[in-house]
Length: 127
Length: 267
Length: 83
Image (cartoon, rainbow over the protein chains, first blue to last red):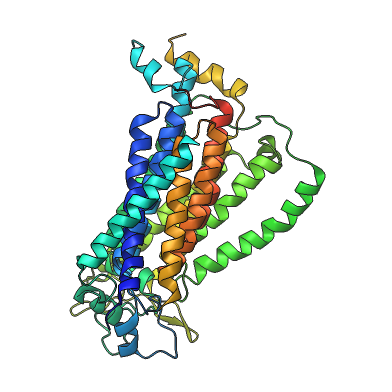
C-alpha cells in the first residue's frame, strides 16, 4: 500500500525533527562552556540517534515484534517491525549509559582538583 | 523573547524542509517494506519446525540479543563492567559508607517503604519473563536501579550502612552476576572437555554435529535454553552495579575530598 | 489516515522544542528538567514506533537515572552555565 501526501509529510517531518534535535545537541556540546551542559547535550544526542535508528526500521500499519499465540507465522512476518535495530539500540543505550555515568564521575573529579567546571578556564590552567 | 524567535524559526525551517522532501518523493521505501534480514530473523525466532536454526523464543528482540547476536551483548556487558570499575577506581582510598545527610520527611519515607517491594516484584517479573514478553536483563536491572536512587535520596546516604549494605557485599553480588554470565557461556566447553563430544561456545540448542543443548521447557513452561539464565544473571549484574554508582555519588563531599584530592596533589 | 503518524510528528516536535530549551538555558537545574521532559516525549515516541523493549530500558534510564546523577553532580559543583 502506498502513502498519500499528508502521511508522507508527517513521516518526513518526524525524520527531520530527529535530525534537527541531533544538530541542536551537537551545538550544545560545542558551544556551551559548562561541562555539565556538555554532558546533558551528549545524553540528548545519544537519545536522538537511537530513536533515529529505530525509526529506520519502522513500518506503518504494523505490530511489535512479539509473536503472540493467536497470530500465525506468515502474518507475523508480513506485518511486524524490524527487530534488529531494536536489539542494536538496546546495546547502544547501555553502553551510552556506562560512558555517561563515567563522564559524570570524571567531571566531579575535575571540580575537586581545579575548582571550576568552565571549559574556558580549564583550558587556561597549566598542569 | 529572543529564544522564542529562534525556536519558531527552527521549527518552521524544519517543517519546510520536510515538506520539500516529501513532495519530491525522496524517501523511497521508508515505512513500507522491511528488509530480507528482518524477515529471516522474524521467521526464525520461534519456529518449532526448524529446530537447528531457531531460538525458540516468541520475543524476537530477546532472541536476537542473546542468541543470534549473543557475542555483541557479551562484549557490551564487558564494556559496562569496565566503566563501573573505572568509576570505582576514581574513588580509591575514600571511605565508602557512612556519609551523612538527613533524608526526607516521614510521609515520603512511608510511601517509599510501600513502593520498594512493588518495584522489586516488577523488576524480577520483567527479568524472568524476558523471553516471552517485552523485557529481559537490562530492563529489569535499570528498573531495580531506581530503588538505589530512592534509598540515597529519601533515606540519606548513611542508611546504606544501617541496612548492612556495605560496598564489599554489593561488589561481590555484582561480580557474581558477571561470573554467572561467563559460566553459561563456558558451560558447553566444560561439557565437551568432560565427555569428549563436540560443543560450541555460547551454544544454545542441538546443532548439526553437536548433541549438547540447554533445556527448552521445564514442566511445560517455555524457558528457551540459555535466554532465561542470561536474563537473570544480567539482571543481578546491572542492578547491583547501579547500587554501587549511587552509593558513591551520594557520599558527601567533606567526607570524600580529603582522601581523593590529597592523593593527587602529592600530600 | 493513521493516527500514529500524526502522533509521531507531534511528539518529535515536542522533543525538538524542549531540546532547544535545555541547550539554551543558563540555570542548570532547569536544563535538566527540560531534558527530562524531552526524554518523556521520546519514550512515547518509542512506544509509537512499536518498540516496547526499548521503552522499558529508556524510561528508567533517561527519566530516572540521568536526571538523578546529573542533579547529584550539580549539587556538588556549579549551578549556572556561565557564559
